[in-house]
View (cartoon, rainbow, N blue to C red):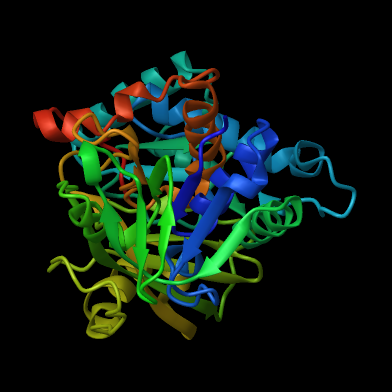
Length: 390
């Protein structure tokens, strides 16, 4: 008999999982997605910059993104639904810049891993960078790493169709807040809701994003995932560049990319504590003190720019190793985690949703082996490191 599955969190990762479960043949009537905010106004999906890259230091993360690119390019065919529109994909690439020998060597090491994994990444010395992208000031730059099959994609459309099709297939989406996990008999047996109702389940999947650690604590488990603020600004330039701007990761930590006819910049605050998941207040002095000076220094054409809009979003940052936590908890049978994506959740949703669905339906991974992301490493204090986190 098919197991009853409760998914805690219905944004892009939870909806990817729900759809993949039905695609792999799990009865939709035995799947319930519990989402505390059905408007999704404050979820990480809503504030994401919605980009995908293959420039990771870890081969498994590269493979996860490669499937993501495949999914983006063939989303309508994957969904098998003529109503599903193509996903917009602007492949301007990512460009990492190194200003010290140590950073340049790190780019070389990562590029070797990427090429071995089939990614199309090229290293560019200063003169080659100047030829390809003449708008940069490069006096301090030793090396750049530029990737193809990378850039912006319309993650909102992907999310909306996963959710819509899962519901149409019969998955229940419940606008409720989970307040407890039933762990009777030493396994996860369901969830308690704020209404006082209880949902029985054979499997509970924690897909609660920045609230993932709170949900884990309800089950008596530790998950080193914290909400961290990340800032975004969209601006226009008095002198637009003469070619698309790659998503440029400056040594200062500021990143900037093309955004249609505008540009989008982002930054991590120097003071980066864990925050409440509902705290979206911003210290906007970061723009004047850090971001704008870095932009104008790297791209002189950006000395004259005007901010159109800005916002604060959150990463669900895994403080152990900045990598996803995916799989079953050995301490509590029936409890699963799909969390801790550290800013990579939107781009990793296709492969991670598919992988978790395989684990639940078949009892094992059938495509990408996601075992290294297992929660077991959390309990053991064993890092599965990813160096390329923006």
